[in-house]
Image 1 (cartoon, helix red, strand yellow):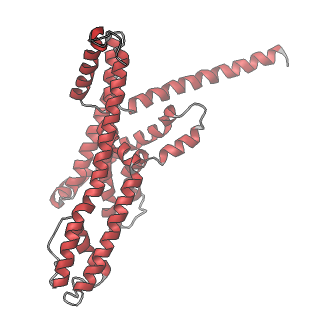
Image 2 (cartoon, rainbow, N blue to C red; image 1 turned 90 degrees about the vertical axis):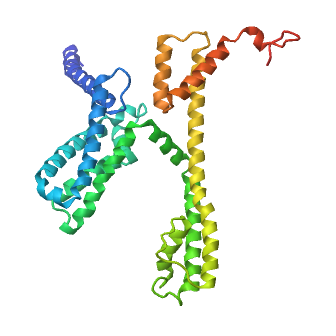
Image 3 (tube, helix red, strand yellow; image 1 turned 30 degrees about the vertical axis):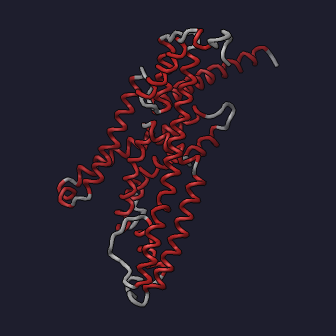
Amino acid sequence: MSLLSVFNTEQIQIPQLVAASAAGRLRQRFFQLLERAEKGDHSSQVIDLFLVTLIILSTVAIVLESVGSLYENYASVFFLFEVYTVSIFTLEYLMRVWCCVESAPAGSNHLVFRLKYMFSAAALIDLVAILPFYLMLGGFVVRGDMRFLRMFRLLRVFKLTRYSAAFDILAQALKENARSLAAAFFILLMVMLVAATGMYYFEHEAQPEAFSSIPASMWWAFATLTTVGYGDITPVTAGGKMFGALITVLGLGMVALPTGILASAYTEQLRRRSERYRRQADHALQDGILSELELHELEELRKTLGLDKNIAREILGYEKKNSDAPESEHCCPHCGRPVQ
């Protein structure tokens, strides 16, 4: 290979590398703008505020559309606002799919990672929030199904979960305890089936319309086990009343089971996050001094973990008090040796 050919090859590659580097920086910046804003990034904070406001206004508009008189008088306004919001949300969705590879592990295939992201819960919510508009606009649904599709637009409200650390805690708790919750709901379903079957045999002859079949009796079982007690269907026979009382008592424990699992999981998540913050605070206080940088890092960690300011302040105060304790407090008062 001649020196001239090598030089020409380098001339071709340099602009490509520069373009790729510029595209990478642009993608990284868009990723930062679309993710939850960090302290000091005013552009990202403005975009977050804009998107949150648009989600809320869009949800309010969808609700107001159901008022017949309002929709008749302002149908064009509702439609134009829907076009505007869908345009913004579509652009956001496409940008998130493009930028998501910034969080991909090193060396991973970008196409595979993008496909994986598109099937994540957050991306599916973004897609479902805009899909009904395009289906209705393209005429892919009959008129009778439009109201059903419009209902899916309300899923846009779940886009707000992206901007709240508290929702992250709940989502993590649900993810880690999915099997336990599934088992609890399966047991609840089995008990509901037994309750519906028993009430059908006790009440079918006395109330053939209310308890016409086991599936029809499931409504009574659901209302009783969840302790809602609508009272639209009640047993009238002695056996039915006794069986109903047993199911009512059983329902108190059955409904509390998944609630208890979720509450315990949420508390455990808070404990883990508090412990992580405590370890970071303890590490920062090893020299007995908190610098401005360390305070900033602790504040960013608090926001990321979704901890309340008062809880973080208590943890930091406790760790600082321990770090300021005199050496004698950590020694045996009799022999003077350090306490292990």
